[in-house]
Length: 599
Image (cartoon, rainbow, N blue to C red; front, top):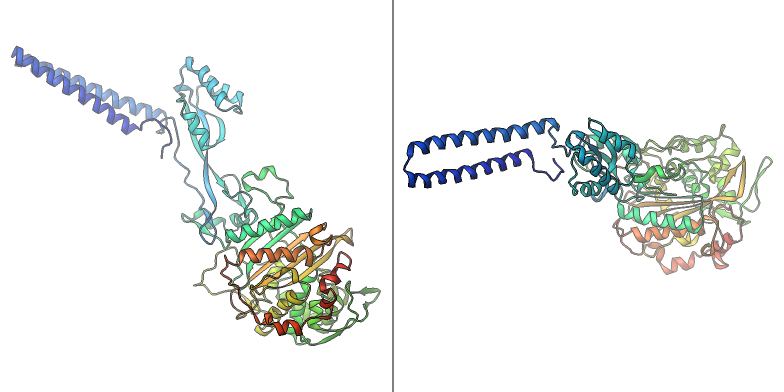
């Protein structure tokens, strides 16, 4: 492929032949006219032979000249080189939208042998005018030398076209491959990035390095760019509105394990990665670990149901704080009553959850934790996944803390993988960035029964309708979920001024337990509170509304239709109204509690 404006060797040679043929035709007919007058056929023949020999000589000189020039310029006409052969495949989303592609920038070089001495000052002035940033020492060295020399790397195609339009002698371009991300910050943590024209450094670029480098066809990811855009928009908005330290969002198909969208804030643009601080390039979904708070109760309650030690009607005495040696476990929104396990979940009682975990026992609870993948990094193709921080020894104290989301730090990705098993019929499935191939069987180990999964879907749905998750509800989309607000450890102690506000949602909650359904997880790191959240920083006020807005926006892209479910019946709504709801509800209870309540 050639990119210069000069004629190719073949075109130039063809033009030379045409010019000679035209001249020979004129000479031939001139002789015929002369012969008609002088009738000197012998002289005419001799002259004709002479001029034919001259023409053959001219043709030979033209061909030789072009051949010599091509040889001296390395067969590229002094303009361009062939494109590199080691290009990477395009990366596209599940619908074929372009996410990453190879683009070509150009190194400008000078060939001094092609520049007459008198022209060199003119070439220098022209290049400085066209490229004010060109290194003067490089330019001077190239013009005063006798070998080809690169004077300016990484020029764009528009730079190249502009310089070529000036027709400067001795100027050439060598293409240089680099990776381009046409959407900038969109999906940056999911897609990842590469070294300049090299191997993948992060994200899908690194995870699928071999396949992308060896493929001639676009490489599809599980991402839906439309969902990705909506998620990023909402995560960015809440992070900025809350002046948060960081924020994350995740959307997965809990049946297939596909990661449909993944967002981490602050953001960065992989096209200009060198301009960003390391904090901006940290993928908090995969590389950070947190004590996730009360969203962990989704796992704890499911374990209690599956172990057979509890049912939704099992009662727990939460009238007084739970005493564990010198430690006292309290509810920030104290109910001071005996509660069923369903109530424990709906009001997010730490006391009730601890009592339930105690009845399950250390061995059984930790066995389930292990089966849910919580003792290792998340199962996904990504290289950049964080390992958990676990108690050195499992005791009654560490078991109690872990049951309501403290004492054990895990990545948001690890939590999402484990929580999906409560929503998909009971299977722990590896998460994946690859678009699911229906012809391939789904991998996964059963951790919970289908019945336990059904109970958890219904319980999360009721929590959105009656419990702490009300601000995530979206009409017709049957949203379920759980809130979480965890104090962060600073200097070895819990700091109530710094919390992680979370919400994990699932929709639709109805249908067969093994149908396609989607998890939406939002976490906001150290929100400050604002007028929209009444100054509060808990998961129910900060994260739950974000999840609801995301679900409202993405449902059409995921083909989730709006309809009523069994919990929309007016009689059910009326009969199931909790006493707390009648007096201000979970909202009123949450508003009265300290910042780090277990919502």
